[in-house]
Amino acid sequence: MRIDRRRFIGAAAVGALAVATTTLAAPRARVVKIVAKRFKFMPEVVKLKKGEPVVFELTTLDVTMGMNIPDFKVRSDIIPGKTMKLAFTPDKAGAFTFVCDVFCGDGHEDMAGKLVVA
Image 1: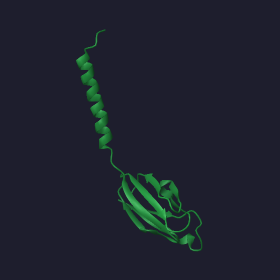
Image 2: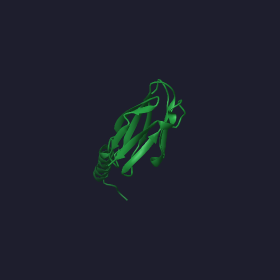
Image 3: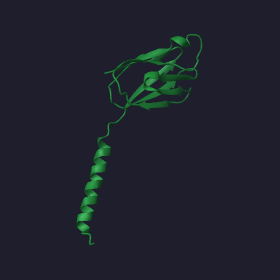
């Protein structure tokens, strides 16, 4: 079987262009900075869009903490002096609570925020 070289190269170029277009069309993650400080998150309310990828950049001003979003089954430690990244894509709309899940002192049980996904 003889292969026409020009057709083969043309087909390969079309395939590569399709892959590149698909890769470029993927949505970029929205970056949301959240600062944890005894005993609150700043901001306390974060608004997101359903299906939009997001990366939380988490920092703490004092002690080791955690961020847990149980409804989406995602969590991260937040370590002093580091920026922790927590990536996910909300797949449902509504209001959801996120909490600190690493004991950070008296008042820890009230440390929570809200995700509003539209």
